[in-house]
Image (cartoon, rainbow, N blue to C red; front, top):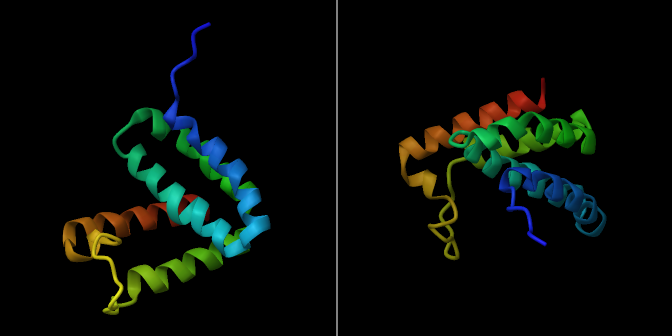
Length: 125
């Protein structure tokens, strides 16, 4: 019996399924951060270079909009915009410079901001 190859562009299905458990165990904020703040951002970045990911993006976005209400998504995106994209970085002693490498690179920062704008548009259409 041969196994079919892993279809990484379909990973969003498992990630969406895991979100219910995350929400139950850790709360709404963690579920939003996991699925939108981490997984969707990574998926959109992959979709910029891979047509298989790009083809799956609309279905992923629809599933996110099914899982979370428009109000929950809107509040999360507003909070993310304020804390990640509009707030000046605060120096911290424990801060890991590898956490947000785009902060030190204007081109990467611009790409990340454009990606955020695209995600906001996709989720709030």
